[in-house]
Image: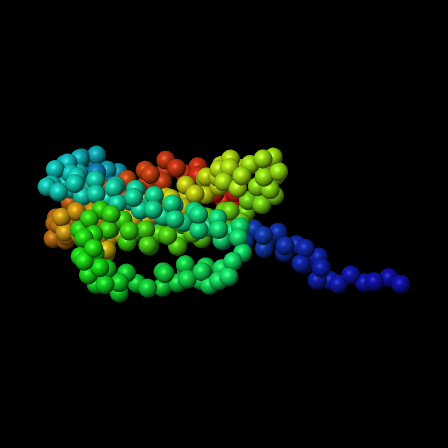
Length: 285
């Protein structure tokens, strides 16, 4: 018996390349729009920061900067800016160390050990992000005043570490879960202790992902403004200083302050970009 081929099959086969082509167009259009959404504000910020005050206030705007550094020079010579910048670096670095120092062991324990309340602990880690920081600002301020941590680099770093720690725990948990436990067991059979197997086998494989979680912690601390504005007075970070001092400043100085805040984070991410790219390969193993 001969089975008749439906007449619609040739039409469907002819339409398949068009569907794939349309899908590629949609994909690339979305990618281009996403890239423009991220890069255009940064580009406009840098163009205005590297232009003279007259060019910033002029219309139409210049497409290329004139590389006039007068606004940036005046901004960095403004009293308190360099001290606030140094405070931001110290707070972000300390936040990064605390987040990785606590988050990486917690992520390893969640990926390798079974214990009562494990799922509840993971849920509680996520729930720490459910409480908005303004809600906790007053109790934190009272607690810090009583303990002597108010207006200090350590106190602000602890608050920022609280914000970054859930991300560090979840990222390192996914990384360690992607590394086969058989590699550690092989190291044990060759005479390594659990700590030696972790340091010699697991840690080198997870290093790119740990570096990536450190980047997230650094950027979270660098960009945070509410806690820095509420919990510090003399030792303000750059974000809190900009919020306080540049609110009524001329437009060129606002662009210069924005560039001074954005550029260090971009340089830091660019310098460690290979760890960000390598993280995906480790997480997918």
